Amino acid sequence: MPALRIAVLLNAAAGTAARLENEKLGAELEAAFARHGMTATLTFLSGAELRAGAEHALLQVKGGELDAIAVGGGDGSIGTVASVLAGCGVPLGILPLGTLNHFARDVGIPLLLDQAVAIMAAGYVQAVDLGEVNGRTFINNSSVGIYPMLVQDRERRRVLHGLPKWLAMIPATFRALKHFPRRRLRIKAAGSTQPYRSPLLFVGNNEYQITPRALGKRERLDGGELCVYVARTQSRLGLIWLGLRAIFGRTDQVHDLRIFKVAKADVDAHASRLPVACDGEVEVMRTPLHYRTRPGSLRVFAPAPLT
Image (cartoon, rainbow, N blue to C red):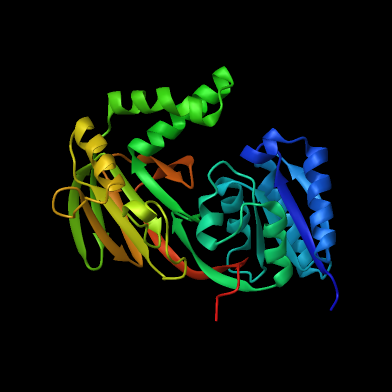
């Protein structure tokens, strides 16, 4: 069979990539793709350039010059490229170069680069869902309330003081708890509208586990649903306690969370605009927020299922 021709878009500022010299990382990846019988064209880009890079690569695939596209970076980078490829059928390869790599882990991609390349070489492609809010796609989750505030402050501190993400997160967390937003929201889903006052609305692309052994993981990415979590607590201490209860698997829908699964949901608020986090990046959006699932709209190279 002819060698798979693949455009590899690398976010030069992603967590792992930033710790390695581009030349060293590029040489390692070129050797891995060659070893697994693929022809790869590597391009290092800034985060702001990724969308344009993906759009150009997609044109090359449509023109018959390439067969697939891969992205190296964290969840934000993967989400950017996924938004370009959504619904077009072009397979996406994932190189986990971010700090946490949530999406790669949930797909089952190994964190070692050679093994991640081997997944692409094996050629098995899985259709997975995407979430969408007001036209913006997300691969993992979207949220309103305290988390977008925390992310905005974390990024401000990173720019001003040159802090790494984990270190900037500490003072950002204290500031978010100090101001502690409680949003008045109206959520329309499954034929009914319910009012809520909550510090955190979290919308997952499929269900997130809240058990001690699998906290923050998803068992499947092709369930065709959004899982909506609304924190019931009204206090700072209550939210911290909720986090601790989640770690030990002791949350319940009566006292801690309102949880429901839907294909779409509309979220309205008193404010005409809200900061909304999508895959760890914040954008100010007009209300109401229109959430929907896009079942099977992204094709990714993934480990073949065991038979």
